Length: 177
Image 1: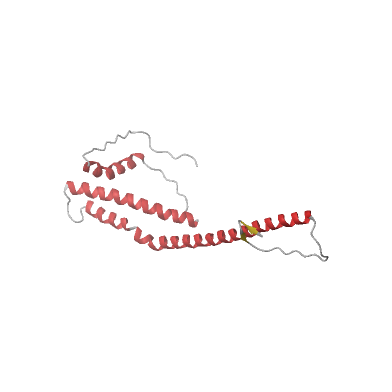
Image 2: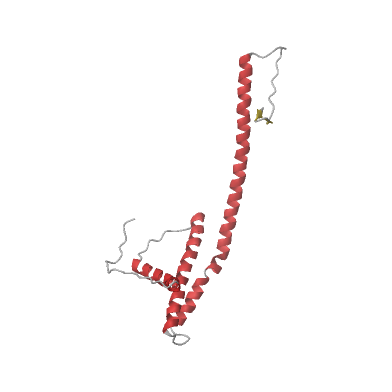
């Protein structure tokens, strides 16, 4: 049995009486040999797929374990937000207006970073089947203000301005799920 000039196996057929095999038997054996080559190749591919699947599963477990071990360290923005809150509250004394603006930006960027980190950790929870869905109201106006606060220093550095106009629409409503 051969495929592309490579020997894959052998098919041995014997007769009780000497002589040639009938042409139909030879054709049947050739068909059987060709199908056997395909079956052998499929079995090899199946084993390779199983092995790759096990490797992927192990890599996924290692990634999840890494995220679980690092989740506390990845939440560092919480401590940064805590310190900026103390600064804003005047625990260390009154801040000048310029410093208050900068601390507000640090808080906004810290919240944004914390959100990204939480999203990554949520993805690992989703993969582990451990995430529960919590539907909450949100304020588009607050999202716009946070975005402007985060982008404003970048725009100012390029001598640009960021303008946002917010309407006074009705409060957010939750649509039925």
